[in-house]
Image 1 (spheres, rainbow, N blue to C red):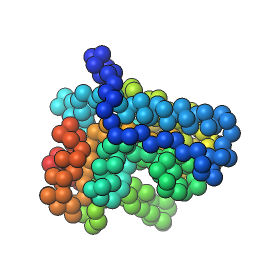
Image 2: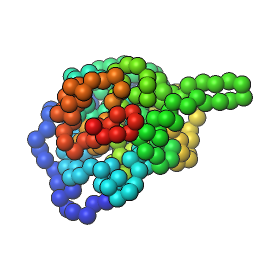
Image 3: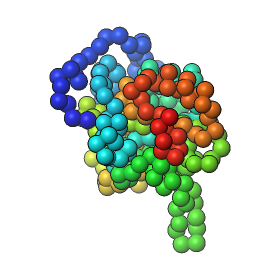
Length: 253
């Protein structure tokens, strides 16, 4: 999102309480001073961006101009539908579980995990792509995206949050991506063991962002086909009128 108006950078002090950076967990005590300083720096940046005013929905603006919903590099985070969880994510954001008392998987410590759109696509095109198996020789395997994101015809109560990464204010967070080659060396001693190879290409399909992404930068939500219309209305009420809500066929509801 381009910043054409100084008001885009205004700060509002009215927010839910800031969750302090934990200092008593076993893993945090193992961090060296430089790593702890980076973690604190990114936590401070995250909390500052939580107060940033997002004046318009970048997806809506782009599609009105004939562009796609999901440009290359858009992030999606899948989870199950739960109204209380939805409100927490709206108020705080998508963050590492370790920052709210939930143990991580011993791989990407203090990172929030996202799937990354590999090329410009619509919502329906991306979810169809997620549904296609990966074929290697005689072996077919499901994409990781299929397990975590709502896709056409799949049962369950999954939803996915869409983060448009075009806003330049987000770069201070997204540059610390454990799977991106630029930041890997700096983050390696924090994230511990990475489960995937580092991929320097723009078309990589996963991201692990140190700390996470604030809730006010969520541009859209995709809901499973099985989520009822009344539940969709609750999602819209919590997320606000600027947030687009999609079905898996790519239609805004």
